[in-house]
Picture (tube, helix red, strand yellow):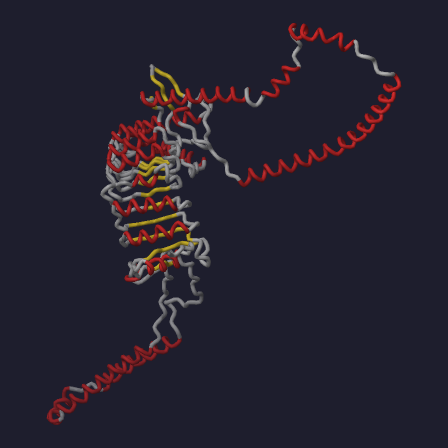
Length: 562
């Protein structure tokens, strides 16, 4: 068997040969925009004429003047013409033939003179640099386009594009064994490749093998089963972007995606534009967003969503009451947290501090039982013979010498130890700083049900989803009710971010709230709906790329309005 090396160009060709696949599919470098061409300077303008053209024009004018003179000289009077009429009638045929020959020769000479004239050079437009022109059959020829980090090193394939030709199962089996060896692969773009339920499942299993694959684009692939949720399962935790535009997804596929989003903790962008999920699909996605805190961008443009789906999406952005199931789950999580905390304190005291406890017990005062038990031994100790004085003196002298020596050694050790301790502490601090620089910050995702809640009117309210930054709902069927609901949600989020009005501590970096809301081409417009006008103006200021107008323009506008 062939062992892939990571070079897709070589691996794909070798594996197709071993599988006896007679395909002419090539692995090529993806075309890029050409650099801008420098325009040639010194081109003469078309209005100026060269010296040769001036001479030709002078010769043409001089020839016209000679023609007038010849006509004047060769004009015949009526009397002379009548006298010589009889003579000319005889040679009429020969004269006509001569005139025809002269006319033909003159036309040939005129054409030659026109060809010899230097036509003025017209300015040529430079070729476009935004795209490269290819032949028609070469453009539609099946191929696998690859973008490399370094084109000289074919082991650094970063993005793979397969566009406009049908992916058959044998080709997918070859790719499933070759792509996992491409360690730099981060993007897989399959546009209009005619996927089926079988090939979709095999590609989903392929993505599990590619550890660094983060961006998957499957635009223009309507699949009957609509099992696109296989790409965002908990097992496939590396995918950050999933694009499913124009895939014919209905409410059935949207509900499957919503159920997968409920458990997913890695997807950041989901593009479902130009599908038919409707309001039922929007409701399914809204229920998943109640407890999903990783999705940042959701594109739902042109999906036939009306006010029913819009109200559910707006409800998620605002504070919402917990259901009975969510309350039960929250209580279970809180009980587990309290139990783990109690177990941690008990374990920290009993097993690790037994030595300390035993030592403290030894230092405790003796009880009455111990004093009673030890009293009979006291006379025995008193009855022992006392040591001699000479021996005691010699022993005391020896102890004094040993103490002086030990004091000298301890002083020398003490003078050397603190220096070593300081150096070691500095080294450890440097190591910790280096580790903190190289290691990325790991953010622990907590369950949203553990967030602070508010109790009002017998219900428990949870603050809404603030990790969703971009929501696109353009070209749908949203009305005035949806606009009012989104306006209330945006006001609530802005009040939470205001420290003077909010009573809950919020991390603005991790949860800034909705920053972009696209609502163009719905049932209402800013001119017909005052709520939508306020909403558009508010979201314009929340956009990170918003630049406020200078004060002069605002003053002029206020004066014009007055």
